Image (tube, rainbow, N blue to C red):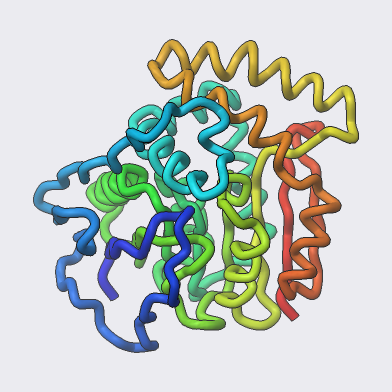
Length: 311
């Protein structure tokens, strides 16, 4: 199995009319390079271990601005959020460290543990961004396992590939990892093809949360789990809600402004307010087919992790 493969499978907000063809079990990849990213017709270029080139970012929608409303306007959510994550990719990891005081690493380790990923398994990181959860999943499944990271942002996946290359340069090609550009609501994977899954700060950004949960249920093998980490909608906890609002408005946005991406982070507060609460997420997960769903508030209720298990 190739180390990295990036095949364009559609923007997150625009669900294709039919599911793209999935690779059959045991079918070899078309790209032979040990660290390469092959793009579909919508994104030109390629990566190899001998020289990575940043893919051209998705062009900004010229039909309107990028204010908060554009992120939630029906039919445009995917385009706007894809543009957002392509824009913030260069500073994403640095901002995560600064804004969480490094605690996001602890929360992600918790999510990987809750996912149940174990040695020699095949694990999936949905909305993988620059690969933080994917790398932790790789440590959990070990050299005998494999990890696939899926995201709709080409620039985020480019950063993930570069991070993997740097790790390989230091530690050797110990882990089998694959990066796929695709739609969390229509994933290009076979049914019941993963033993564990994780999703960090992605469910809140999909255009159709129930559809994304159904896809996670579809690709997991029976008895397996997904851990979904995100900000917690703490509307039912006035203290946590006020603390979260203060944190976002007085720390997150000013810090993002100092890095030139304030506009992209101003959408966080309204996106959290629109995000289902923990109990609502549990109900949606059960409606999607999961036999068990438990939402764990963490960081004093500022964050949460939804753990869902397939029957």
